[in-house]
Every structure is written in C-alpha cells, then in structure tokens.
Length: 284
Image 1 (tube, rainbow, N blue to C red):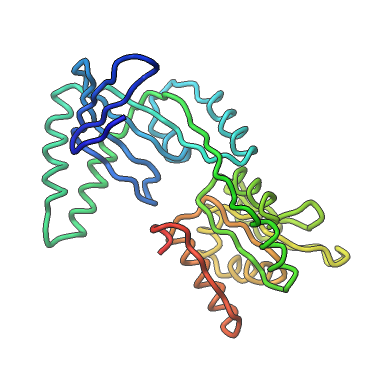
Image 2: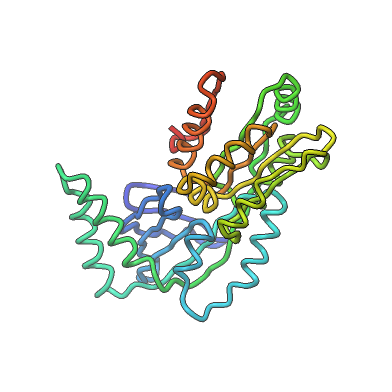
C-alpha cells in the first residue's frame, strides 16, 4: 500500500499494514533472470526474498525439496499462455546478512572499474542466493492488444515473414504464437529444444517437400540457438530451413541472443528489407 526509500508497506488480508525495511536489492538482469530483496520483517527477522524464471530458480532451491508439483503447475500455466515466476526465500542470521550487505554496498560504489564491479556483484549474488526455500509460483496473463492476430495474418498474407523472439517458456511462447496467428494447425512445424543432441538438431531441421504448399514454421529455444550459433554446419542448415518459413518462434532467449538472431537474418539476407521491434528496454 506504500513504498518509500528503504521501506515497503503491505497489507495482508484485512489485517494491519506491515512495514518491511529494505536492506539491499539484487537487481534483475537477462543473465541472472531473477532478482532479490533483503528485508527486515516486522518481527525483526531478516529474509532474502527471490523471484525469477524456473530455469534459474530451481538450481538454487534447497536440496531435498519436492519441486514436481511446482513443475507440473508451471507447465499447465505455460500451456495456458501465462507468464510465470518462481518465488523462494530464506532467513538470514545477522552474522550472514550484515557483512554481506556491507561488502555488496562497497562493490556497488566502485568507480572507474566497471568490469571488476560487475564481476563482484555477480559473485556476491551467487554466494547468497543459494539453499532457498521454495514458496510457490505466480502466473499472469499478458493479453494481446486488440487486432494483433488480424494484423499479423495480414502481414503474412502480404508476403512478410514474421519472427517472434521472446524470453518466455516454450509452452507459453507456442500458446502466444497460436493466439497471435503466427502458428496454426494447418502448417508444417519443426520444434527444437534443449533435450536434443546436435545430431538430432541436424536431422530435425528438414521440412517435407511434399507438404502441398503448407506454411512452415520453426520453434526453437535459447539452448538450441546457442549450439546452432557455435556450429557452422548447424547454423547453415538452420538458416536454410528458416528461409522457407513464414514464421519462426525463438523462446527462452536472452537480449544478446535476440541481437544475434537479428544479425544472422540481416547477414544472410542483405538485400531484404527487415524491421526489428523491441517492446522493452532490455531489447535495445
């Protein structure tokens, strides 16, 4: 209900507002895919509260935690096209948080050596964001603006090829792809994910020639793109396959990978007119 410099006041249910003192913030970035707060609770307990993508959160959850039900819920949310986050926390004794906040503050104040500053902040964050207690997950609907499917369909009918580059889970990205008419049932699709070996990626990057002129689409995740960009044979085959597609969906990709994909398309098709549109600051 209120946020001021150094504190957050929230209201749980119909109880009295509770004020939490913010001792430190570990910012989100595209590499970490998570953020954390260190807060002093109304009862005096100091906690680390972390939220982030499941891929970066689960490795930091306390050993022995049963995450099966959470993974099942996340898959269900993704299938429904919802954007998800995993929440976790842990109590920090005074002998842990006080020296950590002190050295993290010193790192934040480093001037003139950005590389060392960034390295220390990453090191300190990784040091404290471990052995977390799983709290749960959130799922929100990110509604498309009115007319998006019709607009994309009109662009495709005009002969334009549309690619979607997103950090969303594959299930969410596929659902959004169908919702905005990038993907449809009457098209030949190739799906590449992190479970595939390089040999599997090569074998799967082939469309059937006797498809009767169906639209073609490729769905690929960030881990697969990393391997594609690091293997010339695989990269050439991917470029050749995408050239025949009407749409491509790249999911679980970082801003750097988005830039790499854009550069790849512009390099491969230097005479084509291309337009890249980013909807957030991390896409710039």
